[in-house]
Image 1 (cartoon, helix red, strand yellow):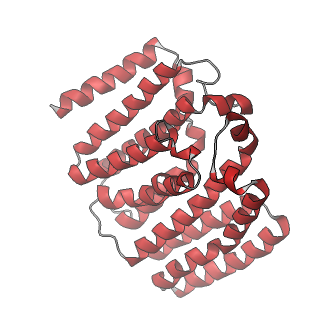
Image 2 (cartoon, one colour; image 1 turned 180 degrees about the vertical axis):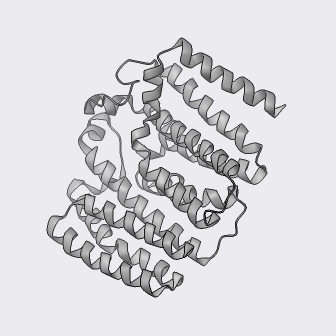
Length: 293
């Protein structure tokens, strides 16, 4: 039965893309914006499986990640029309009039349903967890909840569905136990996701304000939000410190201290969030090395 449903859904997606504007639907996925979230999922994959998963399971896992990220960005495009018009954001084909809103919603839901049915074939635990991810992502972007327009719920929900839970998904998919180290990484990723969301809201402040979107940054005020984000960024290394202490590898810990010192020197002088991004990527890569070595 489920095989038939998956087949029908897959055929429906193919037919829709053939009939309608393929390039516009490809733009709906916003693949260029996936990198950070793809890396979070890959961080979880590397740490939980220790790169020892079968090729077939790995491919299946990343198919679900593809469908999840595609749905998340696509459904966001469906309901960000007004603010994206203010921003003149060409990456949203719905706002640009390349796709009708009802068609974009159907396309997004097809991605979600295909992912949900595929997840069911990998067991109930994967099905339940993946469904929660889809629900949170949907609730963040779409009415009636639209958590992205509810101050502080926007930060919390984003920290979960595009942060901590995305990292934990491989533990469910590959049936791995969650240990202290994993819990510490969850806290760190959630923390970093809060910073990313604040940065996004600061960047979108004017367009969100014109569109009447009340985010956490809107409530705090632009200047206060910038100060909070800067302070949280300065404190970010402290969310990593317990992780490296738990890994307990002298060389890895020493490298972490060195790059942290470089981060503080560079970030304090330049005040560029690009430096924070580079620092976080190197730090999480060191965590993978610490687990694998």
